[in-house]
Amino acid sequence: MDERQALMSFAALSQETRLAVVRTLVVAGPEGMAAGAIAEKMNVSPSNISFHLKELERAGLIGQRRESRSILYSANYDALSGLVTFLMHDCCMGHPRVLGTPESKGDCCSTETPEANPHA
Image (cartoon, rainbow, N blue to C red; front, side, top):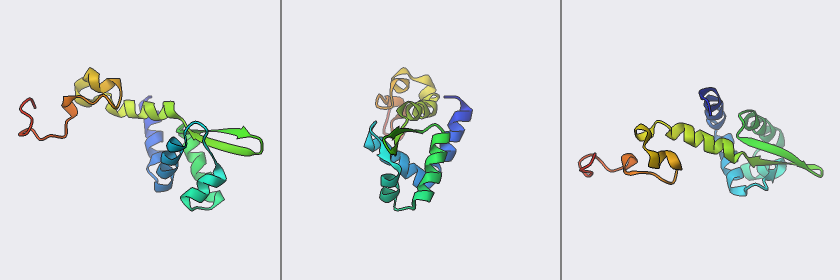
């Protein structure tokens, strides 16, 4: 992910409803959800959710597909992973355990204070 794409993603996620939509779609999985179901879950109007879905899609964070008469929205896991990787890229001076996956956090990113960690 390049810096321009990361900025578009951060801009899209910097709004409360859009962040909640992405988190909801991540949990929903690849099957996704219909716009009406998302609007209901977010407690917003269909026109309001449509605006937010458009912004998230423009940023590449979600995708849509048509099934019968419904349009289903789902998280773009590759884009979200790319955003996390973009954030972690310079963490801990490129420590390979950190760069591998978000779950493989090494000692260099420990939340311990320097006094509590003799190796810091």
